[in-house]
Image (cartoon, rainbow, N blue to C red; front, side, top):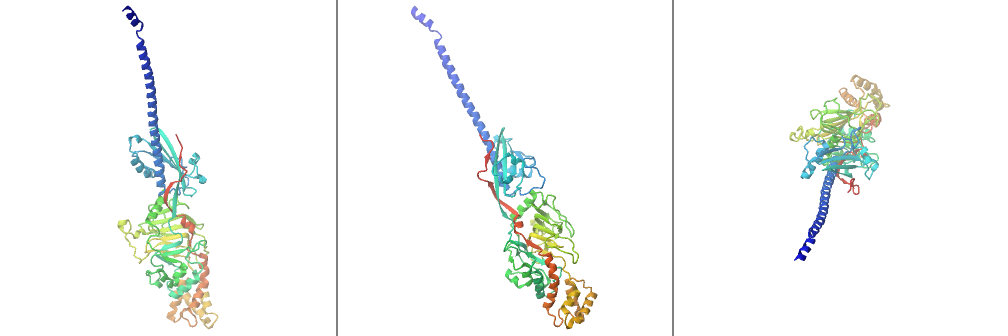
Length: 552
């Protein structure tokens, strides 16, 4: 028994040490495993946060790419800041209800609806749109000092999207490209319901045969609507109803097939046998018109109203320039006109669009005999009158109706002005009026040339004296009226024995043709100018250009 007791005393506490060592080892292992699990959990949480930031940035980029297809930054007023400035980059807080900028408002609804999880509460996002300087295909932060619009006009811009979620920031970039199509078919130099060419208010009192003969001589080489010299088949006139509203044509709508219009000499001469029936009452689609309106709003060249009246100057926004679309929604009461003065050196906008109202392109008052140029006082661009005043009141118009007659002149080119590009007026009732500089005649020279030499030469002084007494001032209209008023004396130059109509027409043409040739065509179709008026379609990120600027 003593031996057993001594052994137990000698072994006391050894088992406890072993147990403590085992416990310590297990605790160390547990702590190590706990640390690993905690680290992995943190990494997982961080990964989820990074992914959330990535997803938000990607949504911002793709949403902006989609929006650009409908609001392409084709132009911006000169002097606007670079794309990294506060006014150019825009952003928001997910779920925020702050006052948005126009650009923020486009993206906010989609992003707020897509990111409702509590993890995105307070997340921020921002976008920059920058031109691809010199056609750059790889992103560089130096692009942030460039323009915030498609300055080089190649239909490509960089989009930089940045978002921050729970302190994690991700930046993605992509080169966005948009598809474009011309807003208006460029082979048409003029589209209208009716056309009037005053030719100095001379033609209304001449018979139809004489009218064709006079204009054939006057307009053979310089028709009112001329084609683009570099584009065969251009310069077509689109006709909805009638081309002309002249007394000789009974002031009515010329209906039926366009081919039938070829029987009217004046029609063929004015348009050079290049006219087609235009199938729709609008020159382009309502969607395209809406996009032209948005383009003007984006470039700050949209005018809700403009003063109206015979001398009221069109309200052109200060930001307007050669690369912008000017859109005037309403002129005066909606059926009044405003004047776009075309200076001697010319004027250029991508387009001037008038919603409700009329527009006059005016050169300058030209004295009789003063020189007129075929290229001075030229408006380069598209002139487009939507004629919305004809629409029903329920649709925002004035309810004037769009019956072919009576027509209403919605675009007028006068006082030596020209258009290089295209002219378009919507609706069957719409007219485009051309009022070239007055053509003048030396009546003494005309009468002398018609009667002398010959037996009737002795009548020349008498006729010249009678024209003077009647106050004929030398214009063609006065000459035609004055000579035929001589019927009260039994004399009329158009019916004197041996003096045929062709002789009279020849005498008129010899004096008038040089004057008309100097003025040239009122409208010269220009394909490239018309096609700069674009509408934008599908847009997306160019393959291979997407970059994550903060990879893991």
